[in-house]
Image (spheres, rainbow, N blue to C red):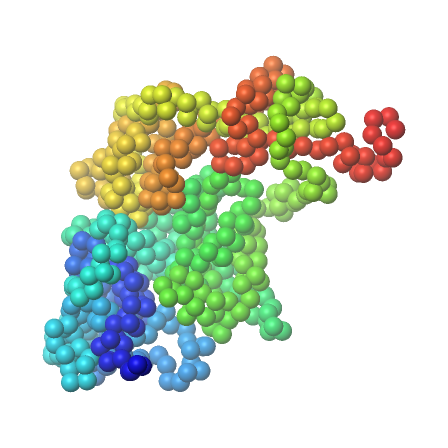
Length: 563
């Protein structure tokens, strides 16, 4: 039997689409504050956010009549007809998210003032029901300066399954911290303050300078190695041409992370984890990035509203573009131009059509009969093996050798840790700091010993007192952020193995290191004795082969050798 759902059930279903976890509430309230023209946004979170979330701003605020309507479903000041959805330029609709949040919480309290002599307080209490089944509200005068404060308590209090599905309190706060950091970087003109259980974890100055926002989120190293850029690209899709404005700040290639989460993107003011744009930013760096590393930066896009659909993802992490490929190309070329000279760009181009013949070696090892006959560009060893020319990436080969030696040592004796004297000081972003707190036991089990700098007075700054040192090779203290992100991601069954892969990379032979004939021969010999000699620990090939037929075809010969 099919029947209509009652209003309360409909409200809860709709709220579930908007409010998936505490970070969802923060996204909606921060966007509302920015839409209201706020210059300062203060966010307070208790516990994992289900206990209490409070967001206060100094924006335009609302009159009493608007405040009363703002907590009702489908009430907004930003749309007058369905067609407006294609041209709206706001981040959200104050009045759309609020009832969804209220439906998911035990209590929502809205206090606002549009600059008049007194403000308005609207309370939606989950225990009170109106005659139509909706949650009841009370409206009363309140004292408040211009702006709006939203206080949400008891999130998911009547949805135990949803509450139990959340991660640990520290992990949920890490999600909140990531959201706030994302907006703080996308909107350096606004001042952001984030507090957790009464402790300030992030403050940005709101100077409208990317460097100041980067300093607050990532510390001095990233901020001092970043450059701003802006560009305009004309793009065409479906016969229509539009301008794509791209600006932001790009950290230099020596400032990297192991994951792409640190590429912060916004589209028409909305900060989001848009994977296609993030990938385009990384592609813009091209060969400037070390293998397996991802950039750190802020990239903002602005397109005509009709070219963007913000309603394609329930968590607003992605958007729909009229033509995603042309937008990605505009981003990639803008980043590439900002980072590289024309000569550098040309140096990465492939001048020979050998792509199809350059394939990883899959046959049994031929290293016993291999002879080193030359080198190329201080990175590749050229080796003769029967009818093939083998090209060995000396860095990838040395990584494989080091990794297998480290793995054997750790399996036999575990990971040793060595104290640092004096301890090293490392700055973590608010998100990474929250992830460290949530995974401290696991990180310390890998050999790090970490303490907050200044007994908690320096938020985001940590004192690394000991580092892992398998085979007596100390890990770099600055790698703490990568280890924290890798452990927290849950992508790897054995975090120790990922640690060894990164550690194997650091002492390995680098591009430009000149090897003697004996050193090159020993490297090849040791690579051939590895359990998996044909790839580095990260899966890249160590050896490529070019068979003689490639040269025969390329030089237009009838046969090889002297034919």
